[in-house]
Length: 84
Image (cartoon, rainbow, N blue to C red; front, side):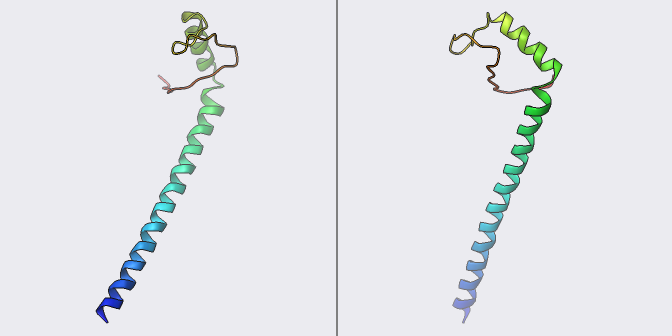
């Protein structure tokens, strides 16, 4: 009888652990989407970002510092963005 109770308990714990993993992933995805939307709609359209981007492009001769390719006016690579 104790073996059946332990088996049931382990099954229940496994189900709860699986639900927690699924819930954590869902929360992570929602937060990630909120961050991406914020950067896309707020940061990348701000005048500060446009000024900073124009200064950096001019400084680097309108070339990518990693691949040395010419950068068009609509080319955007974002490694990290800091509001400072």
